[in-house]
Length: 339
Length: 260
Image (cartoon, rainbow over all chains, first blue to last red; front, side, top):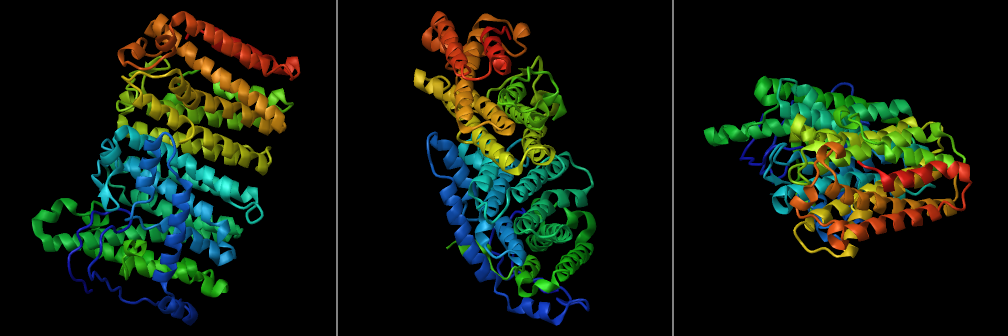
């Protein structure tokens, strides 16, 4: 395994700071089950360009979706978090990418993609509160409550959740997505955020205990799962395809977090005792580096295997394959895409 | 979640929803899932409103507030989870309502509780504390904090029951007046009743220097205004079948004359 330089970011769902030449080599990108065509997709697909285009479009739509009106402060607070330069837009990009396996008009997916980002931002705002994770920073800037106060932060989160749903129903073209599918999308997002999903994960995380796998799945896997599933639902994918997307999304979401954990603990090794507090509290602390690397490989493999079931869709699956590689290799810095 | 949701409460909002559905010929069973979801949403907003950094209440529906019992972090999550459960519940349980009507229900509800509704009202309410507030600002607070959700209750009921746009507008205006009436009476009761009778902390408005109708208008004018609002609300029901509109008539009377 090869790595270099120091990573100083605080672990969260996705990296926030520039990973200077951090590189992790997994023994092989290919496994016997992978067909030649999907392997060549892996090497040819330009994820950076794909992500950059989507990033710009989604950011613009989010900007339009949250104009400042009276009372100004709530909109300022909402925009502050949703439009943060450090945001990666991973949930919306995942949603559109999943949609495009089956569907041919991304306009169908954009409102849901934006809603996912709003809901994601809302849950982060609440997670960062002093009574919760008490985070000082988020996405490369001070946390929402540090700038606007605890009351405004609670309200901003409370406003972003329903805005997400409102955005979906008001902006999804009915000729592209029948209402019955919209209802399934709403149910999926609501379930993800709620007491059996992310709220459960956050609750257990705060209360402590050893169920790190459950927490990781609920907190981090949930958003990946939800985004992929929503994309499939919007495009009218079949039930077994939805479930495949679900398993893929969950694996990739957790994989991102495990890699974050590993990268962070590698960097704190270099920093010495100073970095001890920042050490990941998840997999690495519980299982150690070696076992965590094994888990990474398992998740990578699992995610790939799920996508192999979409072989008949050919090149359309390429973006989702490339997310897996990106989770591990972090070949570019997503926040650079916002320039 | 259960602690707050099942603590009691008058269930005015779910009842408004069901009554509006029946007003236009719909069945109670059609509206029930949405009615329950509305109560979840309302409860979620109360849990968050009671936080120390917001209204800072120790008592709600006759019991200690959620964060007092479970701690703030659990209370934040309970509110968030109730809100999302409400949306999930409507999407999954309202099986006999057509998808296009449910989508309109989502549009209506989500608009009422966010930055154009509940949240806006709560924000301006907090920002107005300790300041001189005009009648117009007071009305903004109460329209957004209370009336918007009540409007959503009745409009959703009419949508589910198969009413037309004209029905929608009449009940919406009815609910707008009821919503304001609710708050005016709330303000009057806060001044005139004890905590035990109210079920929540009394005299808070005076202590917290919050803007209220009695403070802005005087207690007698506030009472007159309440009756004026009630009459305006009742006028909206004139075009409906009397028997079907009876629950909504009586709800208006109840809200105007309640003692807690």
